[in-house]
Image 1 (cartoon, rainbow, N blue to C red):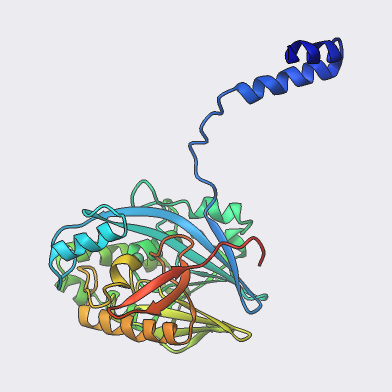
Image 2 (image 1 turned 60 degrees about the vertical axis):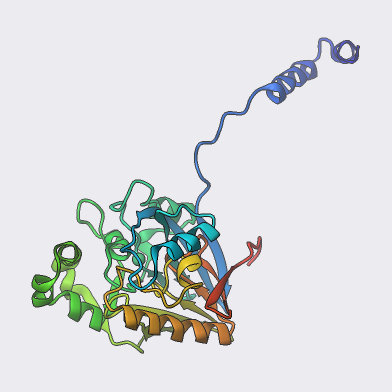
Length: 323
Ligand SMILES: [Zn+2]
């Protein structure tokens, strides 16, 4: 028997013990990892190195109120066509770190672990990426919904990126910080206003407000993208002859909002403006073959947009082992 032959050959030697233990390992059932790998994806635009950092996901329950201007059966079909459950919208969160060579810039800050049990892993992914929050020079914000600003502070109200300048859109600030707008808002939206005051009130003096069109760092241009919120901002990042459009919430899951760019979601403050902004920016990205990233696109959240007969198709990037 082969086993006997091997045993005879190796009898009495240390190798026999080693071989036996390897054989035992090979036969053993491997315990399940029960844990995801870090959510990090790196890519380059010119000389800028970008790191997409996953913060987790929320499955937003949806009803026939979710899309204001389409029959719910069509919404359900769009989700089913994308192999997603029809009663909830998969809403992943992906922030972006841009290393310009002289500055470390973070675009949006994640949920701060305050939105659902499956989100709030940005800190873990920052450390897995070797990025010290203290080393971030600048934090820029696309808009003031909680999933974009809650990561500015931890649960004890301390700044997560203590050395970073914080830059926000002036029109976004003007809308949400206006108490008259808060008092006139429906109850659910009042919570959003209150959350912004919790985050910003005691650090208001440290915040720089930019006008749409301003450059917030070398090669990082801001574009007004109103609709989802009044001051919603998109960032166009340029280095060398390459560009990336950071779309924020111009569209949430592309299987729904790129394929159906006319759909207005319940969370868009001005639905008509949101649709006009989406088409304008998507047309530009498609025509210029620009790389785009969307905060709620499936991780790593970047790819290209192709214009189709009825809307747009998102083509995700291909993972590459080198930069
Ligand atoms: Zn969002």
